[in-house]
Amino acid sequence: MADLRITTTTTSRYLDESIPRKTYLQRLAVFPKGSFHGGWSTFFRHSYQPFVILFTFPAVTYTALIYGTILAWFSVIVNVYSIYMTLPPYNFTSAGIGLMNLPPFIGGVVGSIYGGVLNDWVAVRLARRNNGIFEPEMRLWVALPPILILPASILLFGISTAKGLPWIVPCIGSGLFGFSMIALWDVALTYNMDCYVEIIGDSLIGICFIRNAFATIIAVTITYWIEGMGLINMHIMVAVISFATALTTIPMMIYGKSARRWTEGRLDKMSKRQFGTRG
Image 1 (cartoon, rainbow, N blue to C red):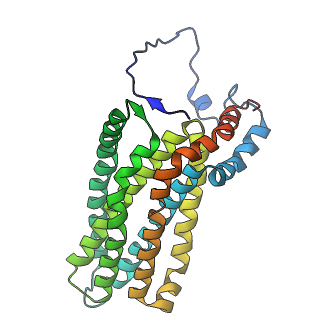
Image 2 (image 1 turned 120 degrees about the vertical axis):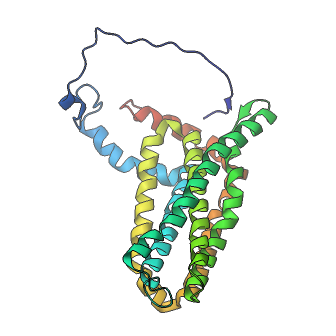
Image 3 (image 1 turned 90 degrees about the vertical axis):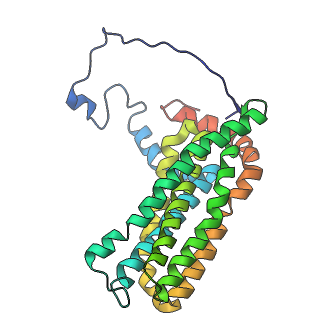
């Protein structure tokens, strides 16, 4: 978990032909022979350990919050245009509803370039300014513009749909949302991996559980939410909540390094337990 210094190394690898290759069925085994260290105790530990990691490592908690809530807001947008775009003044057919997925897709492609290529470029530049020492929090600077675009895109989509503005306006809103969604996902997930690569498997299980839980809750309750508040007020509330949750990026920028130091001992213990080693 210590700070990483950018270096260039050369490694050589070779294939030991004396080691017999596994058959196809052996490679498909749920519990490969010789790799299931610790037996069933290890299996059951990995069934609850992701949730321990989720709530005791701040970077993992932050990533789950960003990942889960943004997917929930995407579920809101998808459900809204699936229903309201079939009504006047839009009267979209099923083909038109399907084409409404294009704006967030296009925005997502741009967001993946922003959150991937630009993210790495900014991290390298900041590391060079820091005497060649890379810190995971350097990646979070790229998240600042999408944090502002996220609530604005939700408002643009929701209010324009409720007022029956030309279809291009909600499309622009959903496209901007797609950009901010993918960009923030890329930043958050990369940050989590940089912080806790030793326990990345269990941490991602916990993150995905929260993501699916949030999306399921929205899918089940969105109809009652709209009926209770109205379409415009619902989107205003979603925009406010999304902005508040995305702003948790700033405390992570400030205190993320201290949090990693605070969890250093726990990280060492968890990383040793990944392969059944007592720690």
